[in-house]
Image 1: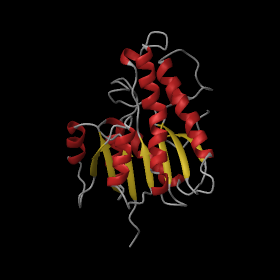
Image 2: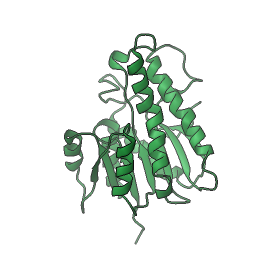
Image 3: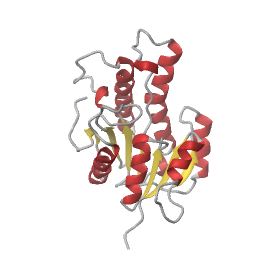
Image 4: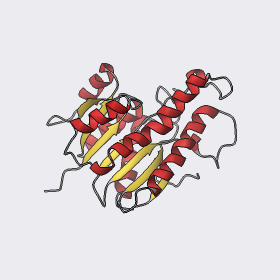
Length: 232
């Protein structure tokens, strides 16, 4: 009998996070998924899981005490995958010049800083060798490919996440882990909008395939949902 695989999906209330939890369950993973509210919990509990799957936990990733409390609640659990799906855009896709200082700080904390803090909190709970830490980035986070001013504040926050993830991967020392920054494509979600060319199902199916294929590679990569390298 194959060894059971465990995934922690942070930010699974809706959209890509919810879709990723569903796809992992379909692929035979055991899933612990975090949400911020009861509506997100209800969506997860409606998924066709078995044997208490998915396990739903409350988490605000900007709350360090809540991260520590989640770690305690999951004491003893070793994960094969920790997938941190965090992303907010400023209201109306405000530019860096138009956004208030408070809005800009909140976007950078949520999109760039908090995901690294979550990863650090669970670093010793990830399986050595085949374990994967994945961060939901964006094609808009590519500095090389940035050719316009669209959504500049959001783009900058994802570029900051990529940089912090690079530093995180470099700090692992002797830990044998794979670190991935994922660009999911332009997806029809609340954030992506109804005109996006990709459905959630297509994106998450590709992401899970990439995560499974890259496990054990022991390198940090910035890749899209098809497994193609994305320019930093």
